[in-house]
Amino acid sequence: MSLKNEIKKAVGDHGMWKKVLKNAVDTGKIDVPIPAIKADNQCSFGKWLYGSTLTEKEKNSSHYREVRELHAAFHEKASKVAQLAVSDQKARALKMLETNGEFTTASAALTTSMIAWLKEKK
Image 1 (cartoon, rainbow, N blue to C red):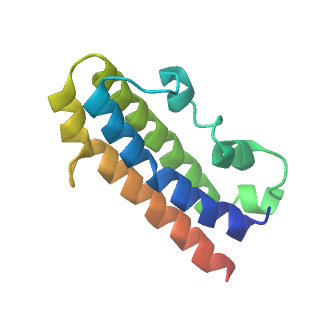
Image 2 (cartoon, rainbow, N blue to C red):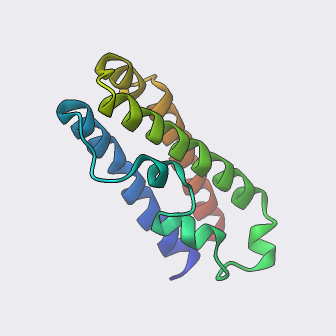
């Protein structure tokens, strides 16, 4: 899949995590193992990001480096919300999902960076 298509797909896929995490808070359960959520190379975008389809030039770009860093931070925050949710710490998990919460901020930063990378490629 092309860089443009991967980024577009990733924006949507990562946007869905807020719903998944909110459901985890509501139910106290999540279907994905927390270590898999934390790993930034296990989702389809992460596999692509760390894979061999990107050129060395693309991997050396500032956009790539920034997206990779923010993608790792996103997964770190998502796993933290999930851990709190399944540990009956709903208030702390919900705080991370608020508009200025740690997860929401990390998600917005990742999305902004991916969109900037996408615009550069147009």
